[in-house]
Length: 375
Image (cartoon, rainbow, N blue to C red; front, side, top):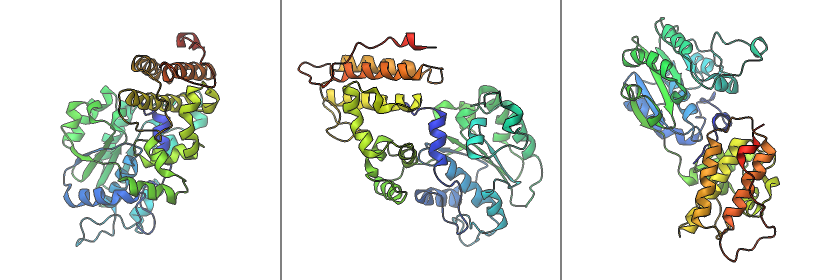
């Protein structure tokens, strides 16, 4: 399933706090168990956290780093989280801890307001598009930082999020430090898919899987954030609560999500007017998936039962899925977004109502060739 790219992924994590607060409360309640496990058992110098941004991979990595650097840890409770009150915990919250380096692509550093020391203000580099990769010069800066003495005597922690953003050159530059970092230095890497990393990177790290929370826990948390019918948006986001929160904050309420299948079947592109292309593609992929599951005699996953038309036939739906895949490979292209949305929805209408005897309030027009929509 298409996740929609970096903008949507980064928004999912920025929808909540990133580290423990002044009372030591964790940013997300379901992080308590994996945090206690890591603090009690993780003794290596390199940890690879496998978890979706929509589950809280970045808050988890930063809170674990905060706990490692905490200056009020109780030796009798090795699995205790960060206290939140000590000077170290406060500096982590203000992004100013000298023994914590957070290495992210420039796009995410701006989104989270967690810059590197040599980042230029936006006004100094306004015309340059921020990088979505972690570049080799930034990795070299991490290596140089790791060789310096800890400022507060609790060791040093470098967080690389996501490690998938390392290009080949920067990943290779990090290998020696991953294998044998300076004494007292730990590295925390996150990834949504370990298979996307170089085998040489994976082999130098211990792996911890950060699972999505159980549905009751996630829906209760979403309800505490003010979401009505949280279970609908949670299913829409594959059980990833931070993604569900972002969807709601973008104005996509549960009733709007449930009405989308019929709107697409009726060719009503206006139902997604103004949506960014990655979110449109993600939504249509999910609708196509559920329609194909129903056509094969199964059950849908992303939309409430009874909302997806059952008239679709697998060949037409498969052709629509292939076209969505093709467009998704170029979702950063400067498309004419209005015409692209109209074309994709018209194709979806034709595919969803391809079966004999289908009834719709509007006959879907012939789908526009997407090749003609590039400006």
